[in-house]
Image (cartoon, rainbow, N blue to C red; front, side, top):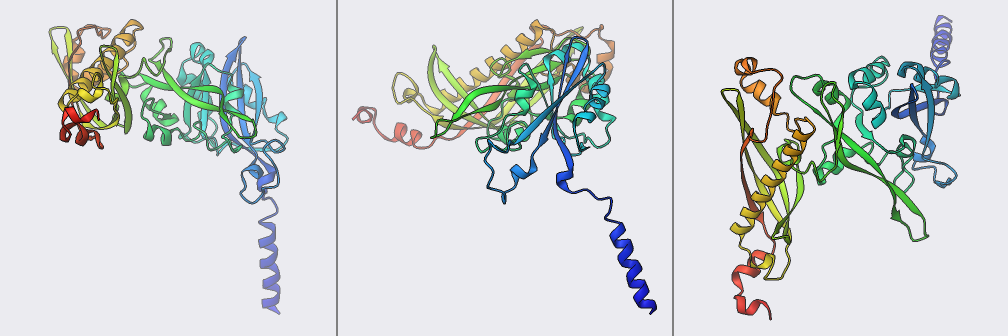
Length: 394
């Protein structure tokens, strides 16, 4: 009898523990946030995914009938007020724990320091500190609505930029915690990747098109100074000094003609600094390997070059890119390579004795030495070195 009563009580308590549980379809999951500023108000965009659309089991609904994402919009005098004004429009309980991307407009970056913008987000305990962060000059709503070719909103560069960076290391993606760590650090600037909307990038056999996202350049943020945008080409020198650069292409030219396309693999940069009076100098050394990707067969171009000649040309091209990016930053008072922070860490006492504010000039970047060895050449090296020149044209 006692066992029977005990079984009933246990069953009762087990059932009551589930009464306040919500199913997945009863919760609105926010997966990305966009922040804009216009006419004295913050504008918050939130992306909510349709998890039924992501299911591999539910294949009956097409992407037209079941969109991959919805975007909501709310305004407020502060970001917290804008987020609060969003709740009456959601129709469901909102969960913020799946936010994996944050997009800032150029307008909001011009209006308020990044620390103040993110402070409101940090007050939401469900929002983690690991979302990817981006800036854009495009419409944020359009950015958040982009899907891949198969109607999936999650598998885009917005949610997984690191995978693309490993294959082609140009603009390094950063997460929110890294941004908040680097932004206030002494003598360091933040490179906030810019994400663009590319119209009708993909075409299907039935005539449909699909937009795509593309990381093109970055906004350089430094303290309270106005952010400055540089495109990918203008920041081409930055990748040679980033420790996370995995593989990145390098096109070398001579007299305006294309000589060869190489893939530079895991370049390692070391920057040493020293001070002479009030002038600070920097010496850069870069090591790594390269693989020959494309090689024009014409003897007037790449086919006439030996490996040591290509090595010299790629070193000159890398040095030119590093200096060009550095000088471009000086024009806008931006320390693109964080040279002030490097000198501060290497010579704390000497740094404190220098006049304030810290100044860089065109001669500060004293020397750049590149030691990149071409380790993979395919059949080109065999063709060029083993076959007589008189026979190569036959």
